[in-house]
Length: 234
Image (tube, rainbow, N blue to C red; front, side, top):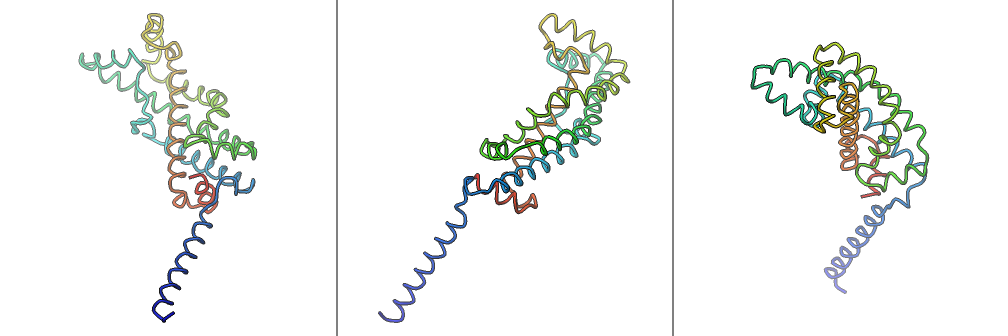
C-alpha cells in the first residue's frame, strides 16, 4: 500500500473511531442515569423553575403587564366591561382589573416555601417518572402537590387587596346574579376566589414556561447536572 492510500485509510479509520466515540458518549438514556443524578437534576429544575416564576410574577406588573397571565374579568362580566367603557365608565373597570392583578402580584411570593417543600419531599421514583413525563410534567407535579395549600396561602392576601377597592363588593353582587343565570361560572362569582384561582393558574403557567426553557437549553440554565439529565431524555 503506498503512502497516500495508507494516509487515506488512516484518516477514514480515525474518523470512524471518533464518530463511534461521539455516539457512545451521547447515547445516554434515562436508564443510564443513577437515581441520585435523576433526583438531583429534577430537583434543580424544580427549584430553578419555581424561583424564576415567583420572581417574575411577584413584582409590579408581573401579572398586569404579562398578557399570558393577566387576569381579566370573567366571561360575561368582561363583555359587560367593554360596554361600560363605551359608556364612559372605563376608569372604574380599569381600577378593578388593576386591583385584581395587583392582588395576584402580592400573593405569589407566598408560594416559595410550599414549592420548595414539594421539592424536598419528592422521592427517586417521582424524579424518574417526571423526567419521562413530557414537557410540563414538572408543572403538573407542582400543581398536584401544592395547588390546594397555595389557595389557602393566597386567599387572605387577595382578600385584603381586593377589599380596598369599592367595586369588589359590587363585583360579587353582579357576578352572583350572572352566575345564577349561567353567564358566569359559579367559582368565578366571588372575586376573592376568582382572583386566587387565576393567580394559581398564572403561577403554574409561568413555571411551565421556565420548565420548557430548561429542558430545551439546560446549558443556559447553568447546571451540569441539568445538562446531563435533560440531555438524556431528548
